[in-house]
Image (cartoon, rainbow, N blue to C red; front, side, top):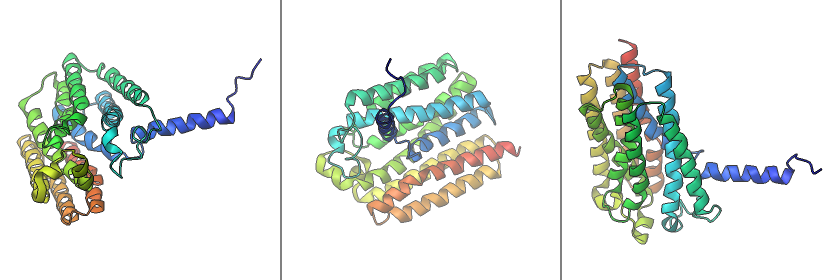
Length: 298
């Protein structure tokens, strides 16, 4: 009888294929899912008035990572024809031809189903909102064909964990949740405009619409104004909820980071713009940490 032990060549191919899947979902670039994680967890803490419990913390943390990974797979399939003309994205698995589109979609669907299985541990309202969040996320890649500010649409997609968090805790979505979503939308607009500034020359050449192109010479001013609107919206919400000085310190730390980013992007150098984008998750963490500390010290 033939041996059931895998041959070295089989093991090598399996490892290479796993590496390809990890590359597809940007596993080695955690900044993307951290940008989704911090506002979602912050909303959980605000909704619960403190620590939300291990179950919800695990559901939303794992769900955020899974959905962001699924979104990367769908985005790469949708943008494959554009990405091949952009130097930074030309080597992505689907774009480079190392992975078939069907396989990428299957990976994305599998990850989305795992995330949905986690949401089933919550309540009907959260489940319904998760379906809306999925549809919004799937549509995002195509907005770059016709929307002047696709980054604003992305802001909705990347902020939808906020109303879901409130729904999971309270079985309702108060006006506060939508206010926080609106504020977070401006943060997404800020950091994704920085991201778009990296590829502006390529995007102009291939005809993709981005906020960096739409804002033109006012791009830096728009980024800084968006940072300010985000921080002011969350500061107002936190003060209304009676959060103390640790929250204010967290917001001030985030504001200092935003000012640093403004210095980085002022010259519109692509490398410095990308540095600003990659470090945005620390800005979101500062706000989240301020919220956690405020409740912990009450």
